[in-house]
Amino acid sequence: MTSRRDVYTAINYERDRQDAKWGSQRDLPGHLWMTILTEEVGEAAKEVLERRHNHLRMELTQVAAVAVCWLEALGDSLTCALCGLGIDDGEPIAIGSGSVAHERCAEAETNAEVTP
Image (cartoon, rainbow, N blue to C red):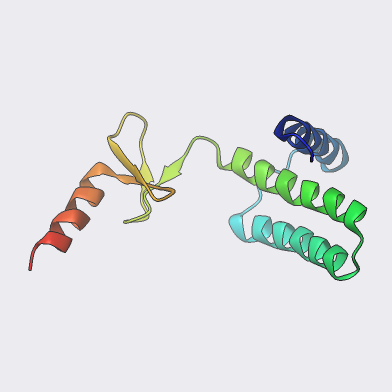
């Protein structure tokens, strides 16, 4: 079994390799990020079908590195999972089930669920 540290080291190495090869691509629109990520997932799926587990590890590392790059490109901006608007620094937030929302949106949703 590979340690988490080794996995993250491999992802970080792959991120550096991608930047060296492609340069900074942090300005890409979301649909292009999804295209790149989906292409990498497709390559990983191909390795599964061909039972090439050594290549699968490499492809999954590339998938993770592309996802990390996309996250880096998003910066510190957060979007409310309930209303879709941006969340400003210092604004109260609610965190739950892997999503982030304006505190006011979460409270409104909770109140709507309680109201008959």
